[in-house]
Amino acid sequence: GGDPGLPLGYVVRKVIRIEDSEKWVKYAEARETIKNTRGDGYGKWAASAEPGLLTSKVVEDHAEAFAPLDHGINEMYLMHGTNIRASLSVGHNGVNLRAAGTHRGSHAGEGFYMSESITKADEYASDDRGEVGAYYDDVYAVVVLRVTMGKMNYTENFDKEAAAVSMGANAAFDSLLCDRLKAVDTFREFVVYNPDQAYAEYVILYERQYRIPDFRAPGRLGMPEDFSFQVPVYWENCYKNTAKLCSETSMCAPPNTGLCRKTQECQQFFVRKEVDVHSPTFALLQHMVNASAQQGKGGGRSTKLIRAERIEASKLWQMYVERKLEIRKQAQRKPDRRCKPIAEVDGAKESGNVLTTAIMDAPGVSDSSISVTHLELGINEVLAFHGTSKDACENILEGGFQIHDASEHRSRFGKGAYLAEDVHKSLEYCVENDGCNIVLLCRVTCGEIYYTTRNTEEDATTTAQGLSMNCTIGNPRGEGPREIVVFEKDQLYPEFVLYLQGEAQSEFRL
Image 1 (cartoon, rainbow, N blue to C red):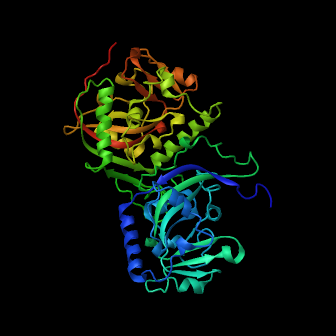
Image 2: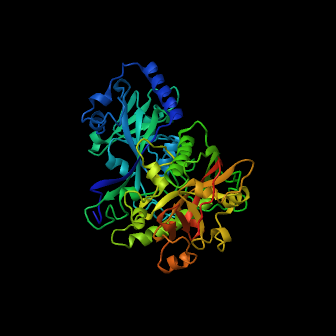
Image 3: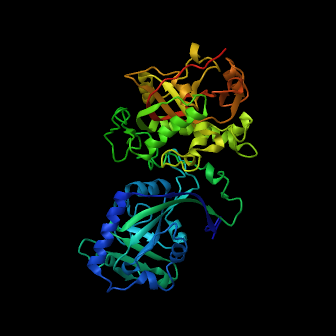
């Protein structure tokens, strides 16, 4: 009873596929152990259940998304409802039995609880309404897992005794099935007590749909492509809440160490991770450097990527997120709930997009950490280059960008932080160190854009701010190279440090 009542349906916002070789090996080993230990003499419940397992038909009909199952050991796909951060933690760190019961109780002991029904899984799901820095209001999560149930302890009622004979290395059973569907016509629940028996394959984020049309109506948060995570899903700390400050203020996440005395509960972090030169990420970074020069005004000059580091700095990132949210709210007050796209501002819908975005969006170009899918295009979020010196780079990573009064060489389009879509334009601002130039590849939230084709417009920032614009794009004589000028230091975040070898010649013309 009561409004809004139970959800009538669910609207998917985002799906994340997890491919983790280390965790898959552990799962495969646990599956093989059960197969060797139990054999086929204890039944094939998953293939013959009455009524049939709810996930079976979807799995069978979509071989492109789900690999074949071994019904002889009761292998099946099940769901685990939770909140977004916990789901990302399961995806990143694997199943954690110590978290059992933290939300709805552990009535069958310290195990991992799953369901074949999204309705049941949703009972365990929650958003972060009421939390410090709540970011995922009205968005819930379910983890889809590949599970080897093995020899199941079948019961119609949860009790500690049934759980006891299903736990431990020498248990009589490999898992527990509580058939409340048969007992009271509700749902079947499945529990494993060995975390390696469950492999998280998908994380699905969704909204609830109620019978009252306007009650938290799905879609009011924007289109699915507009959804962005509080912390990037490819970061090591993707499941943390960066809005929660640590009580160990003086010791928390000092630059270059990432250490804190309250490691287990601290939500702050600083990670500076070298990108493997043999990885797809490194190859894509080199491709982006080359392609931006070839398609831009770099004249195809060769620039070699020597090293690259990915930066995960929680405090700088949270400042960036808060600015994004502010610009998003500004955009959502418009009829189409979006900022005017950069290509339309430039007047060239087919060719006016930012080069880095076009490069990432090209066929055959993909990477887990550099992708258009990670950008919030509705507020003109892009990747852009910022040339700098070694000392300035270290200062930026520690305290963020500083917006100074326009200096002599950066006054072309007024006061702000200058970035470019063509790496060779950014190289003009570098100070060489040990034979390398340092360029930051930054996330930039452009928002509403003031566009100018004048060769110089030193009062552009003042004009743009007077029009409630968030940044300037300067395109000298309409010929480029274009520069992006943001007015606030938290409109950009330094995600990669690139160490480049190659020269750039100034193309500034009066």
